[in-house]
Image (cartoon, rainbow, N blue to C red; front, side, top):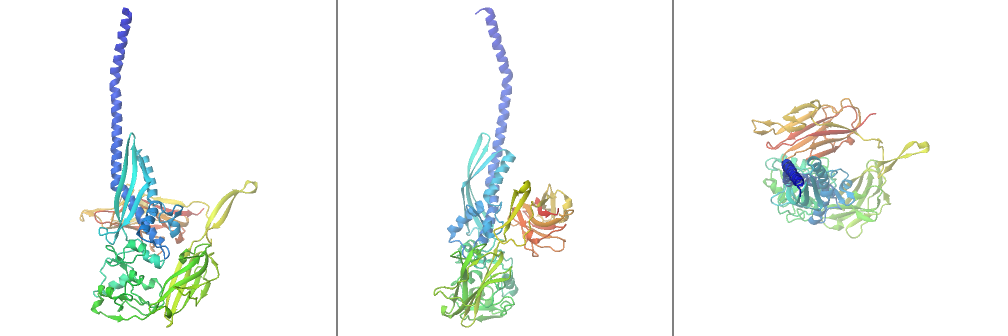
Length: 631
């Protein structure tokens, strides 16, 4: 190699070395920044997993479970109680996870009420996964097929709460890092506010559970027992069935969690005095309490028992055990009553499309071919004289059939073979069965159910000359006087950032669009109570009909409450049942149906009240009103 070649070789090596020295720090700096970003993503993902396991997932389970139990308590009836605890667990898991009773059947369709819509766990997980990706750019995947849930009540939950255990797998992917997690936990939810399955099964009546916050003692104050019966309140009862047992019609004593309520005769429309003790699980379980038990004596109580069907409480009686428990043993104005034999009508059914079922299933276009009733007598079957039936549509005030003397089948039932009746009328239906003995004493059972009105099905098409037309047909029931509005309702939102939406406020603070109870330095905690009243939400607008009120409760710790009621004039306030009360809101999105108010015009107000524990407080961050607007 000549000198010139050696020179150029050396120069090339020097230049390469300079470039390496110049760029090496920049390369290391880029790598260091990437490492910081990855470490940050890992830290965020790790915190996310901790929050999912410690709080987020359990909160979703609480909301979905409470909704599912509410729906199941409405789902059961005389022919649809669950066979046992195993069957209840299976159905609860399906409803709580998906909102369905079967693959293609939503439970909301069976109960006629939007209880699980957007409230199943899987629906909540869908929104949660999207929020995680949109907010954190982290992929979260919950494996639905791995989910398992179950129900339990034990000494830890007590009578007033239900435990739900859940197990589900999920994965988190944050850049190059990923986690596979198996989550298992237990949550506790209150049964306060859930409908009592016993009343759904035997009477088709919705009775929400509310525990008495007072002592029920006839001797100390007979008004406490009167209030207990009149308000349909509940107490813990060691030898009564638990809430879960009521769902599968097991009325034996619970080992830990029994509850009971007194039967209010006014709710059942009795036409005669019944030979039973008026405690719910005793009333519906032959052999548990007098007059079928060891002590066959029933007791009446002064100030309580009446013998006039138009007065409270017609024929009310207690068995010896409850008689003593309520303080009746003192003889304070009480009289013993030795029962005599009476008829007792225990069940009615309809033959629907050739299958015996609860008459509440005689829905749109079903064929009712026969009806039957089981009537027993405490002195023997031979004392039953006759059984009659009346089938009516209350809305049309029309009687479809009536018989005073249905034939006895020689076994357990009196059966009437009516002319085949195709259910082609909507609204309320009633089957009244009347059982009369040879002393002309009678027992009556009234079964009432609702056949949904039809809905309009709208089809757009182009007619002659290309003119756009619409075809509207009635589907699924009698359409009656339903109105057709081809368009979506208008929504009006109130996020509380606009103080003009608030008319009056007490013990409440509003900050960043979020409502809390204020802190009280004297109490060293949150205010116990607070209320908020809106201004006219429809100010400057004209509504044809208000259809729904929506409220988002992002935080609702155990022991706290939020209630709402509505008005058009700020004087007369009602809840969604159109009575002078309040709607109790649940955690998450609350959708309150108001179309039946038939409220049109230019005024709508809401009023809310908040309760805290002093330590924890509920929150509120969004209100929306849906209505059809005048055009």
